[in-house]
Length: 130
Ligand code: THU
Image 1 (tube, rainbow, N blue to C red):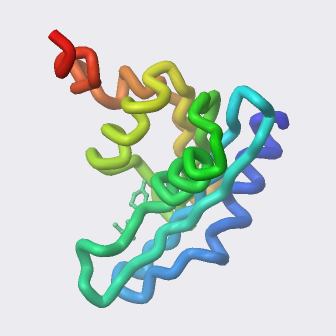
Image 2: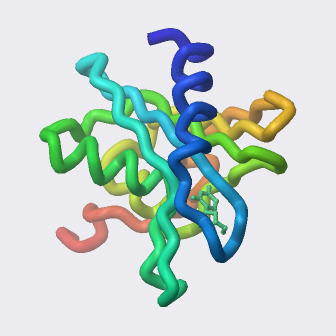
């Protein structure tokens, strides 16, 4: 899938966001090495910490369907940039430290990072084995 197609898919997921508390919809689209694509949206909860971010929804869907080799993730905000939170950066690090992460704002501007750029000196399982 082209980057533009993945961006369009992430943007289309804004309409699925369940965000009555923040009113900040986020959509995500994740492409795996196999070519499989998984989408996500943020899903909030009256007990606020129970909510999940759009990109973690997409990654959890992928892993639970047997796909861990993530290549590219697009995260779309309806207004401002959706920049991944620390928990999502750590989740990305577990599976795909070299994945490309494309952040989009509502105007269609994009900023692209690697996971290592988003999480310098990040913790991974290597430290647990030393
Ligand atoms: N959110 C995401 O889903 N992804 C991001 O990259 C940034 C923040 C969500 C979490 C919450 O539902 C809302 O945006 C406001 O923080």
